[in-house]
Image (tube, rainbow over all chains, first blue to last red; front, side, top):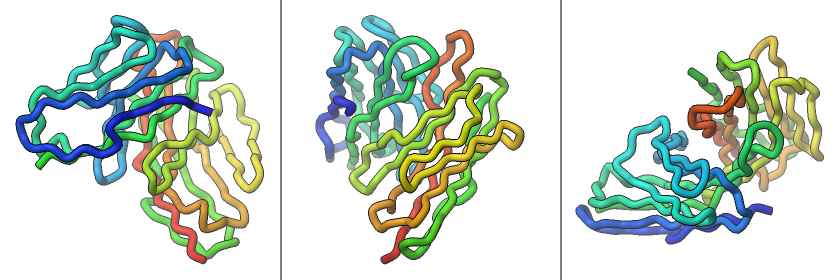
Length: 115
Length: 118
């Protein structure tokens, strides 16, 4: 069973606020990911990390930033939230390397609403 | 570029009926991985199955079965004797394995909303 946590689960904030979405995993996974899921259900990769001090942008351009100072922690930050950032944000992790056991395990998600 | 197509946006069936969710993929890699995830109303994504491109064996797990056919680039998912608890959004996803490089994140289809009516 996957042990990956996201907080907060729900967040409603005003435009212009700075927010950080937390993601932690206790499985010692090297690879971590952030996906954005629009109300229309499609998920898109916005950030990923191969390990400590590694961060890369994903397929979908995002104004958010991420950091990876510790293996287990992969927070996402929005410096100035806007209504267009309203979405669900899902964090995932998996074992390093290619091949077997490469399925990603997902956290419960954070539903962000920017007014 | 890789792509996953789930043509069925929504399917509604009556409990105990069998239902098949379609998934068609596109990739240029010879090594790739296919996945199915379930997303119940609570929002989390639950991993169901992984298949690699070298293994075309079909798989059965209880009432769930998967049919992988490279000739048609399809990875379909069948639920036998559906139950109300199967109601959820189901996503098919693709990851290119290769020799590394790139994001190796998942490319998702748009999902199929499955409604099982009592």
